[in-house]
Length: 117
Picture 1 (cartoon, rainbow, N blue to C red):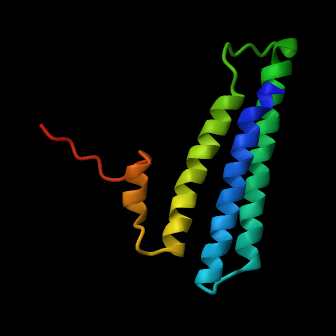
Picture 2: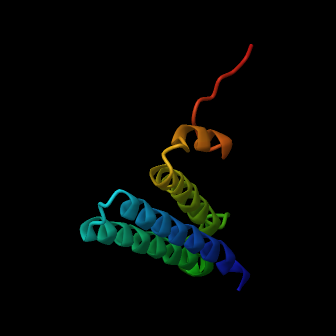
């Protein structure tokens, strides 16, 4: 069961992205079923990646796939980081006072990286 924790966490991030996107669309009065459908298909694509990674991690060695590292946590980490960026963009749509660049910088997801020599 422990192997599914990363997937459960990723699913929570997917849900939060969907929810913040929905609220942002309501705020801007631009709720479109085609955009929502596209977003849901992307989420289904992520779930299929989780299933594939799980199958490779658990059953790959039986068919000669020996990667030496579990790929399910890597796939879910990538998905969560992607969703974080999308969630921040959606939050900025909901509240324009919250600039996405500043939020990404605060969450260490990008933004301006000024080095001081």
